[in-house]
Amino acid sequence: MSMDVRNLANRPVIIGGGIAGLMTALHMAPEQVLLLSRSPLGADASSAWAQGGLAASLGDDDKPALHLADTLAAGDGLCDAEAARRIVYAAPAAIEDLSRLGVRFDRTPEGALRLGLEAAHGRRRIVHAGGDGSGREIMRALVAAVRSTPSIVVVEGIEARRLVVEDGRIAGVLASCSTGPVFVATGRVVLATGGIGGLFHDTTNPLGSCGQGLALAARAGAIFADLEFIQFHPTALDGPCRPMPLISEAVRGEGATIVDETGRRFLDGVPGAELAPRDIVARAVWRHLADGHRVFLDAREKPGAMFARQFPTIASACGKAGIDAARDLIPIRPAQHYHMGGVAVDLAGRTSIPGLWACGEVASTGLHGANRLASNSLTEAIVCARWVAESVAASPEHRGKPAMASDLPAPDPGPVRPLLSHALGVTRDGKGLKQAARTLLALSQRHETASDPAAVGLMITVAALLRRESRGAHFRTDFPHDVAMARRSQMTLDAAIAAALEFESSPMLESVA
Ligand code: SIN
Image (cartoon, rainbow, N blue to C red):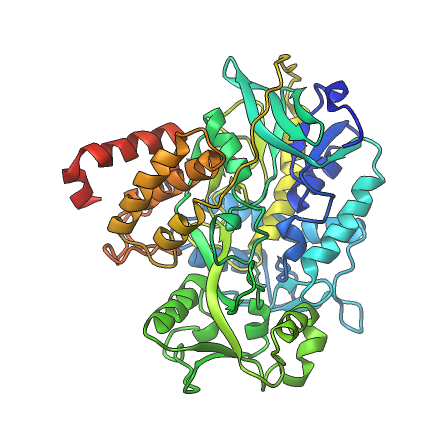
């Protein structure tokens, strides 16, 4: 870090240098903002890894109402229908925003946007850039735009450790950088910190994405929504590499099939087969593996010889594992991919704490429900960043309060990873969740490096325990059916601790939860 951020007090602070954070900063111009990023921009954000692109109803055969219907169907009764409506209707304009910022989307020889198909979409409506390199290309353009916007001060190599709350509203950010702890006084903070993949062994996310934004919001007392809904991608490349390379759903959109070691397409009888909603495909693959089979993606016929041209990133990842994707079967298994739950926000990104907004994967707008429709999340981040920026700009300036900067250690998700991987996988059960909750409660209260990741894990685990049904990506083997009334869930850290203590002290509760 080359500047003293204390001199930059009282301007809005955006925490996170992925697509949500960069777009929010750009939309706030010309208001001066401070953007804090743990790594050099573009280096470590899961946004840059996105292969799927952005879903938007742009085709002649498509319209926002059809995109909305697919979103609600995938969300399995749990979407906030109004939030979903507003976001998908704004999606085409978001693609235009990105084009104006210099994103080079894939186009047909005639110059029209090339539209791809992904699971559970009834139309071709996925806009890509660079084939399977959409996130990389969007980040390239946004980083360049941010670097040339004088109102955005980017501070790299700094990590937020605590949000300071005074009189019930945000008063500043306590952060850590190479020269030690710093306190930035501000009354307006936007969390854009991404997801939780680093809390799992098998993930397609960067391992550094381990729920830091959720921990910041939790320790500040924020309300969360739908935390139990974690999306597993059915086709991560099976092998020793961590994080696991993603084999995009777009490969199945181009005709690849899922087979076992006998060559059987075991999803054949499932409505939608390989292009059924992601939770259904992930569970089918998971069960088949659990039954002792090996599972593969077969792209030999389609996209076949076109594979490397259409999917260069995936072809290269397969090549590193000694697999020629156009000629060999590709071994796959499900891996944690996306968190539908997050800090509860309205469509302006406002959280339950005055002065705190959230945008992107860390937030829960209600768009995704119990199961995110593929490529809806980049769209959500781009659409909502504008609304968040407008809301921050319109909010009266509350000056932060000076506070002492104290040193807090970097979070270590290591002890939490095996617990969440075991208890919060593709399928869950009450016994495993309760065991995990017990250990996570103890870890979260120890003031050690694992305590923040454990606090996040505890909230997710308790939310999963309290949802005694199976819906979307949350599948309880002890409650395999859904209940008639779908309800979004809410959680706070205090509520999670209280519930975990109650489970500890009351064995009767254990038998029903
Ligand atoms: C994929 O390309 O399969 C992932 C897209 C997404 O997660 O939205």
